[in-house]
Length: 281
Image (cartoon, rainbow, N blue to C red; front, top):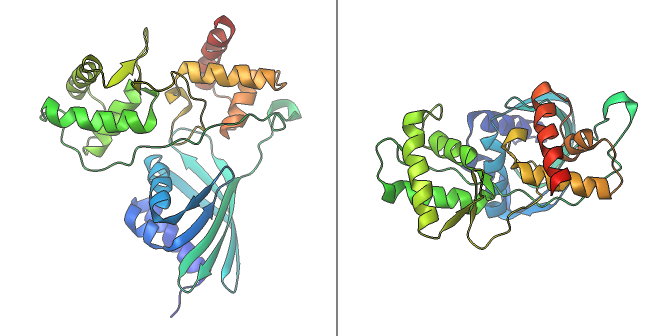
């Protein structure tokens, strides 16, 4: 029996839940186009990067509406990633034969608190390029020659990046469940060796890592990061740009820019720190 758009979509959801990166990419034609709300993703290499970033967030996806006709499916979903608030998404996919030729996806606009909208205030955000996970050696037993190159990969892909996030990405790729002090020690040691060798730079007074010769601050999409995984100076610069564009409720405007909904106590505290940095610099 031939695949229908709904059966292909349902399989995609199962593959996302299972973390099957290559099988996800194989659902698309070699010349397939996935049109996000911020940029096009064309071809298998770009699709692989896109889905690797998605899978890194371990999303839970609930379909709220799906309608198909001939070779087209239109859908709406609610996506929850980690501890972040659910995000409403929409999409449409078009089959050619039994694989996906075109796929459009985006996020519904979010209303801010008190019935006011800051969605009209927009600033340009760079796309977030996530590190593509692969099998890596256990940091507790691997030598510096094995750990250093992987950390450099992560920092080169995602820098400026909090060292804490870089270490967690490494540990997860190695099959670990959590970043323990035993795992942190060799990862931190490898970081300082990379810094001493002139491969990476570490922001003074904080553990923000970036490749040598790259900008100290890049204002990017949230990507697979949790809000508190964004370097504080990056959020502060976003606040300055939003203020220059006319935003007044900066914490809410930041959440809207990142596609987040609820202002949790944790988010409020983090954004208050960012505002202090934004006002000082």
